[in-house]
Length: 99
Image (cartoon, rainbow, N blue to C red; front, side):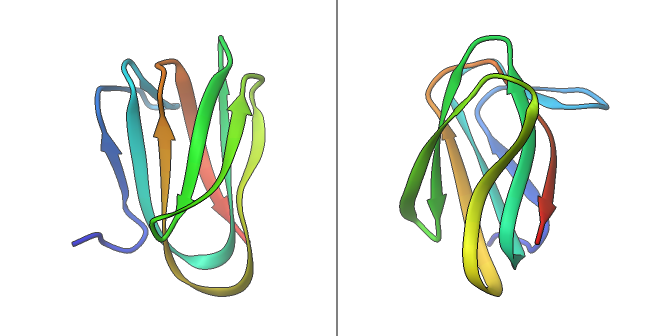
C-alpha cells in the first residue's frame, strides 16, 4: 500500500543529498493530499516524462533546463497518486511542492 507523502522510486536511481537521478528508464510514485503539484527538476539532455494521476494519463512533459515544472493542476484538494514515467535516463529531481 502506498503511504501518504512518501516518494517511491522504481528502477535504478542515483540518490544524492541534492537530487535523485535515474540511470535507466524508471518511475516515481507519490501519494499526496493537495490540489496542484510541482517538481523542480532538470536534465543535461531533454527527457520526456509521462504524467499519470490516479492511474490515468494526464500529459507529457519535456524536461531539460533546471526549473519548476507543473505536474498536476487540480480543481479541488484531495488525496491522489501521481506517477511520473521516464523512458530515458538523465532526469535530476530536486524537490516537489504543492498548492
